[in-house]
Length: 256
Length: 289
Image (cartoon, rainbow over all chains, first blue to last red; front, top):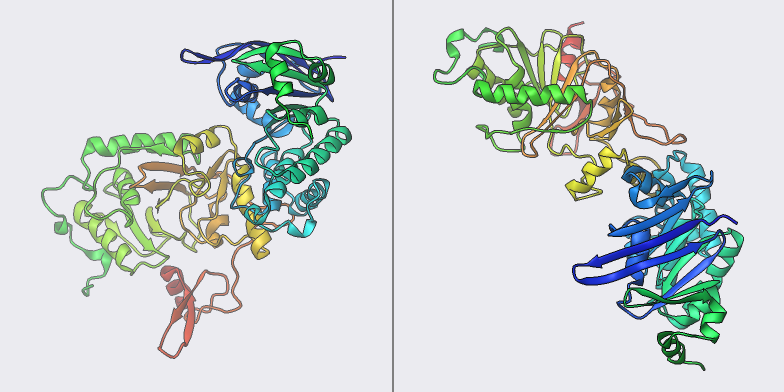
């Protein structure tokens, strides 16, 4: 099978501090890749670099579009990169307030990506918005409410709907369950899992919560100090960790 | 005003000690260069070195500089404010140019070669050879959605106008229709999003394929933009919520016009009001006919 995304020797440093060093991995269609590591290990930098939010020092980010063309993301003109981020890619922020337009209604938030990509029929946009609200288990009657009237979990689900509305192929998530209480986390993870399956999404999910990756991801990358120290199938890495840091990480997880 | 009709001011009324049209020749030339750029890229905002004018910002310093840059000895100037020739902004700008240029002025739209306007387009259709200069307070239509100029410039460059449609979506959701009544955003030549200055949206269709040259000047914001003659100007809308203009179920109480833009005027302290044409010249013509 052809890969969807290929990261080749990606490096990024902030002055003397090396945030990502020679990162390589492939992502295949329908695959969920977890990136775990402690705070400051470079996992968010890696995600933001892939999303084009920051310039990388060296390396390649190769994306294969639906037509089978390979595109080097960091050499793509900005207009194409923006278009990609609004159609075939999506980014889910840790804090929904960063990913949502807080002064725009829930429906308007979902409509934004459609309007960005040229939809100009109000009725159809609204129908689509309602469909996606239902997909993320938000009552359709809340469509005209402001996100600030939503609970944290609902805001996160709304952010998902806002991203999913253009039916992206690749979603980048930065700690999507951070800041949510445990029962809300469970519900969101459950929803994510069914969305990934139903819409055949490829996902890169950054988290420090091993429970999240155990539940969601197929493959796992463990990062420490900007380097990949271990990678492989999620169960394999978590049940038989080889690297001392991974062993520490796994043993530090609370098990009820 | 005295009994003199505005047209027959003697040449000697020109104030000595000023260059023709107040600004010096180099300044006028630099402004004309910006105007030419603006005409070459319809709807795109061009920065210019806006000068201090003998009036405060917000009173048409942008429009007045454009007028000064393009006015010639043979021009006939008309100045309107909200459609009226006799309001203080219009009277003073007209008097200013009579003082510093000695050009002929008129209230008749059809007789003017150069029209400076605040917040209206005359009801009488403009024709080839005429120039209309708009006074613009805020040239950037995206400013309320995106406070960063760097980002709005990028949005223009990438033709990334989805955010404006989000605002229209919210309008329809909240009010059932697009509630923007003035300064209604337009697309110029299918490329640049442009603020038409605070004209009522009633006037928006007049900008489309207009035979006159339309110039826009923002003095405080130091921006010039333009719509050349016969350029496509479309107001933003949705396929199922098309752009509409304001309508009144009344006629002008002076001239009986049912097609012009009407002002509501309170006429006593008991709440009585009347509806009259905003465009005074058009109203006079209708009354004469």
